[in-house]
Amino acid sequence: MNQNSVPLLEAAQRYLDINHAPFYMPAHKRGQGIDCEFMAIMGKNIFRLDLPELPDLEEPIAEAEALAADAYGSDRAWFLTNGSTCGVQAMLLATCQQGDKILIGRNCHKAAIAGLVLNGATPIYLPTDYLPEFDLDLGVSPETLESFLKKYPDAKAVMLVSPNYFGVCGELAKMVEIAHDFNVPLLVDAAHGAHLGFHPDLPISAIQAGADLVVQSTHKMAGSLTQSSILHLQGDRIAAEQVDRALQILRSSSPNLLLMISLDVARRQMAVNGKELLTETIRLAQKSRSQLDQIPNLRTFSQIEVPNLDETRLTVMVDRLGVTGFEADIYLHSQLNVMAEMPTLTQLVFSLSLGNTQTDIDRLVQAFQKLGKEKLITQLITNYELRITNYQLPITNYQSNLTPRQAYFAKCDRILLNNAIGCISAESLCPYPPGIPLVCIGEKITLDVVQMLQAILRSEGIINGASDETLKTILVVRQDVF
Ligand SMILES: Cc1ncc(COP(=O)(O)O)c(C=O)c1O
Image (cartoon, rainbow, N blue to C red; front, side, top):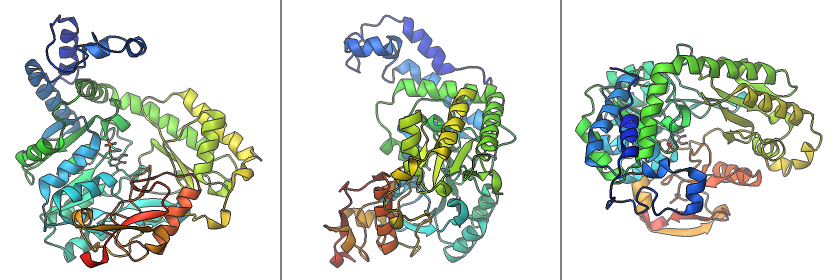
């Protein structure tokens, strides 16, 4: 196919000039009724193109999706305007239902746990490997997957996250082979992998590895607008109609055209110029790592051998500076205007992509040089003795006591978090980012989890999903339910 063409952008250009009397929605009518201050900031074209799904847009949308499938190497692609959250949930709804077992990496995003509330399936959580020295989640290993498939050969699907927040992609091709040997489809949450497959020095994409369904947040790593993602299908283990049916339930009936145009354009950019753009991103990432490695007490992942690591993701270990990643984040942000993607207790993770420049990297390196020398920083240290210095995902039991759906609909009580140890959680609590629940809805609350949640809150981290933001209390399933 001609990857230079952009059917949705071309349709948008035609629409800019059409002078409709607009009696369709949205109410601002192509900007005629929009707030003046908003218009002054945004310009007028964005409103002229904020259009509903008009009949003559159907064809360009279908063409743009076909071009995306071609560029990424899948058999079918769906544009999503509710992010990969929608795609993860569609993958789950299309493949499993109540009573089915699904093997799912315990490092899954909270969107997947919400998807399990929707489909009612029973998760069997796959433990992930962990490198303590670098506080690094290595994802699910092929050996783990194989042993769980032997134990649960009746599983309806496997869902893995690849790459994870640190850029660890794992041995996906091997995992696809293992899952397919057991005749089980492999679903991949590749929210962080929309740029993979376009540069030979990066790990292969989940589609190239042979996964059956793959969702990618194009907005995170490949230049489209926030909330736009693509869901891909390949092979015949999962029927396209099943995916269509799931999307009918999950998608908005008013998809945002601007987001879809941005997906079309981002696909062209990757297909046509991806290699060149990513060469520069990789160069910047390598350069920043070599400069950061020279700063005393800082470490990057250049010192470890992790197979299939996405080099564009930069993790800086700050633990040996005697600060948490949260404290370092506040310092870099407030004092030097350098903003990381994710702080953890021990690290700062920076997402480098086609939009970054040499100037960004210089500022990042200078900021760390300053942080490394900063005496003031010791004053930021609070509650040192209460800190937990690693973030190993807690797995006490692989099969949770109640399915996420059972726990969601069960009668609950609100109790003090300190009294909740041993109870079944009725909410998923996740440090955000990365959005991986420390306790999933339906899982037993353990002392480790409570301590880790409290340590993250004390260190200025954010816990998402809690109905009580202070985390003094938590919703638990009533004892008589299970
Ligand atoms: C691994 C993973 N999956 C899914 C999502 C959800 O993606 P989106 O923000 O595109 O809805 C995220 C978001 O951070 C994520 O990190």
